Length: 67
Image (cartoon, rainbow, N blue to C red; front, top):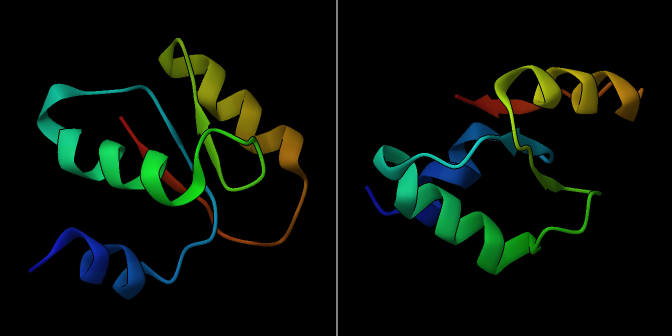
């Protein structure tokens, strides 16, 4: 499955997480598609901080968190 198909199948519109070499293809695609604008994609420095970033968003949408 191509990474674009995978992301579309998730039906998520918000992605946040700590960069991980095992998820490089996913990270690269999200940066390409959304950049790091804070609206759809946030790159967190620490694992705990991405939970806070998700909570700060305060919407009903379901985020995809990557560890």
